[in-house]
Image (cartoon, rainbow, N blue to C red; front, side, top):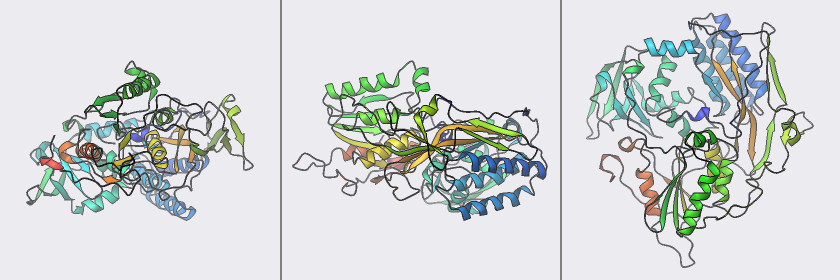
Length: 519
């Protein structure tokens, strides 16, 4: 997942609580080897499929039944040749990626992690993926002299476009959105994903184009994970921070909605926001840049609390929030039962059972289906530009969707990582597969928004497309930030509204990027 916390491990709602499976009669012992037989791999695959089909509220939200059948058949064909946990990962991940749920994940076992740390030979590059190319951020070992910003044309004869397509089966994502996977694969994350896709490699053939147009091919040795540096420092505040750019313009970076992270920083989320918007009001701010590019979500309903300081009227946010049932259970080939509880008896008081047996959330305070049941004050009424991208996920993507739906902001950056029609997140089932030791994390609540997709399977798009660049990798004040500043200086109509008040009317400024970009 890049220099940031893996977005897949951040839940969109009510994430302060994760549910672990009750597995009576089974104690899963840590294995000190990744070796396994095809029969053991098939047992783990069958258990994973059963749990996915039992736990996910709508497994066909982003795929068809026919696509799911084909994906299962392909996975079963692969496990017949599997001799280790790494092989099972390569069979399972395309199956999970097919589902189109970004909060779904598969964590390697301790034995797999240890093997990677001690014997794995990884790509000696830190990489930045955009939606049309891949660039070198840093090099290690024999690739330490590769200039930053060099474009990767191919690795071992596979073009960058082919390698990008490979990535879409190596990580989960919401719908058909590619940006979230590209952010996960940026930095040192690509070396790790490539290792899991293809295994340890003694050497790599690189075809590169430097910024002066020269093309060269070279062979470099793979490196141990410990030989790779941390890469460029990523400047991300722990909690929301406000900076004044001039007398009228402020920059608000909100990197997380996690209450835990605020507590760790000795802060309170609601108090931080209240103080921030009190300051914006007292200083009569006219322009605000809201940075959500590192916001992978956190605790429900923090995204809605921020929305309430930007829009006066509460919004019906969800059409429905649904779960399969109060408890989920499956049985493996040996008759062992795996079970998790979605809602306790007290939480069931806020649920209604549908005719099909599923559960749906009642629209009652303090939660329900609304953004909020009361108004916040003061509400910021000025001009708003939102910076967003592939790491804008879960609750971060929900806020982007709410602001887009309310036509409240202009968006700069990339398509956000979460689908505009909602997500499957919230409580999750952490199921350890007994033979491989890998942990399958299944989200259990379907949050369906009260509006249509953009189209289905896609996230909020940028009004001004400004992807990250290798020269400013991990730095918040980059090309997209400069575009946001220039947008706020565009001419205003006589009625006091910006000429670009609705998507499609924005005039995106041409902004320098790369090594010549002003810092």
